[in-house]
Length: 375
Ligand SMILES: *[C@@H]1O[C@H](CO)[C@@H](O)[C@H](O)[C@H]1NC(C)=O
Image (cartoon, rainbow, N blue to C red; front, side, top):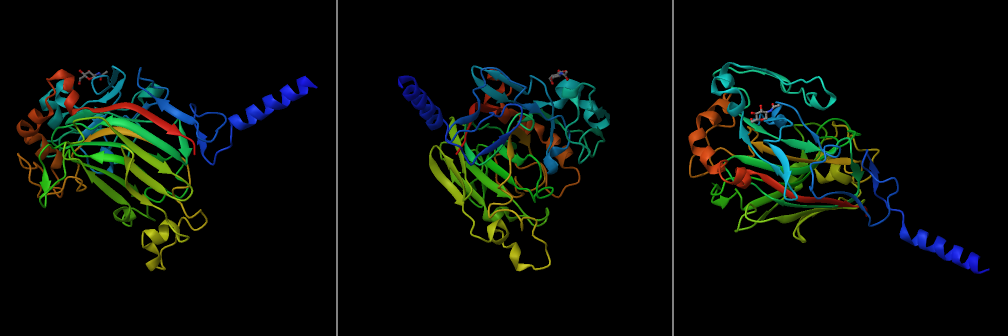
């Protein structure tokens, strides 16, 4: 009899130890069982675990003609003192200055870990010309695309934003399987983005290191993207580059909510019309809704994976023309020679990166930890 009581107790303990969660996961580092409230992914960056984080290897420029070349190189990404650093460097340090305007880069590698990860926008092979130079900055973008993706949960990333003109750090999530089609039909969740300029103003507002933003991208095709109705910023007069902050996402079957240091900066809780209605797309009856058979959260009702990167510049307007900065923005967003124009302005921006001080820590995106919990 006692043994059956003990057996029943043990069963009860096991049962209460794992309440099933609405969260679902996949990937080589995803837990087999998902218990409500449990931590389901974490990295404290005590070491650089490339089983969790796959490097991008591409010249693609993020679809925005950004100026960086992403590769797997410990100059640009490393862990040190329990932190991840993503640090920019000059492509000319490796190949020489002349190479930018006359060299040929084919970054496809033979080893599985060296494959070019994004051939879009001439991402695997480019030839530099004087008006259209090769990507002048080297940096890194890492992702959990094979190791971990999840649907619904809580995310917290403790990070310090970089300082330096035209640096564009981002910690974000992309859909694992594009269940509703290619970008932006399957969505994009930007947990935090900022700009490294210490004194940049747009219409009188500091939009550099004093601003951090969170955004959702969603829409039936690239020209129809409802991000402006799901974009929030929070200002910090001390600058997000001065200290570590906790960037948080709460993602449930009813809402997505962004916070910084436990203070909500924005949320979206779509009604029964879902993101189709939230984006205002329902006003055009000629466009087919790719989410019509999804839940009201679609496209945010599928698994996403994590990305951490440090980009530079680009021509999509993230750095608007007409900003006021101690040294003016060296390229126009409409310029066909944007990367060359940026490079020619080097004497002004490179010193703001202080790469020669402290191994470039100020210009580095630093991440203390990434943690994800099941709902
Ligand atoms: C890594 O980056 C450094 C600095 O740019 C460069 O000198 C080195 O050749 C790179 N390593 C590889 C394998 O490309």
